[in-house]
Length: 413
View 1 (cartoon, one colour):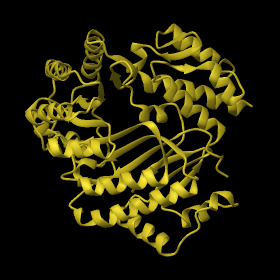
View 2 (cartoon, one colour):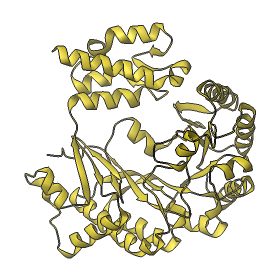
View 3 (tube, one colour):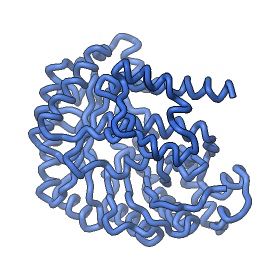
View 4 (cartoon, rainbow, N blue to C red):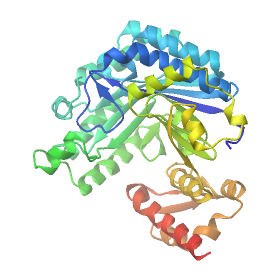
């Protein structure tokens, strides 16, 4: 049984449409299915109504429209979606409402419309200010488009704009990356997210690298890029509040902090993930199957109060767009909480950890934590455990050590 919602929710809406799919992307996104948009909007609204009613119109502190390319949708369609959320959820007075945008999609009129319907934060997928690299990674915009889009956003009245950048790109040098960073800092955005390219299996770019058609920088070079980034961000007075994210004071991504603090959220749209303790579940991945299921549910007036009844996973899947469900064990919840907590600059609060799980962090991870602190990978500051600068670059190894310790501890018991 899902526990009652005792804290504010975050809401994620997945928009799976793209003009073209980037060759490095392994997200649930599609090109050339624009004909599905009208039915998709109907389906999203049906699902919003379903979850709003099912969860008794919970207070919602953040809304994030991600993708895919949400800025691909018309303003009229976005208005319908936002209005449905406002009707079916209690939106906090100062709610953060974010939309991901491609630079080429933005203009003054569209930006002003976004503000009118309540969107107050933009996340612009700049990725690079090097035109040759942008072409190489399959982006449709150039550096001029990116700068113009950012400036138009500010001129239109947006005070909270984030830009995404990528490093470790094919053929990218450290000098090239520093150049991109200087151009980004010249814009002075309130928030910057930086991601190292990961070549995911099944993507065209992974195949190109495997077949020798492209070459990406090695780990030493990307580590240098990241290290240089930390210095530049510090000099520019950005707060490094999460391993891949920097912001001006007070401009953290509240929505993403929901994930990093292991708080409840609902995902709506094809393939969107949700977490309502003790369940993690995700929607049907195929847009066509998702649309078909929401139409069936609407036509057959499926009961919206099944969370108050006894149910099994089959009933849950039959009654919703959910494709599958995972019951979160105590061990898994501990792992998730630790993994995400130490990524934050504020760290994992060990006092709150004990309150939440009824056991001290030291009892579970004492010896290995001391070892990692002595190696300079973790630091403990006033009951807050977090990664050091060196630890951030070796995050996966640090978390693996901790999880291995937890697994051994529980096995012995």
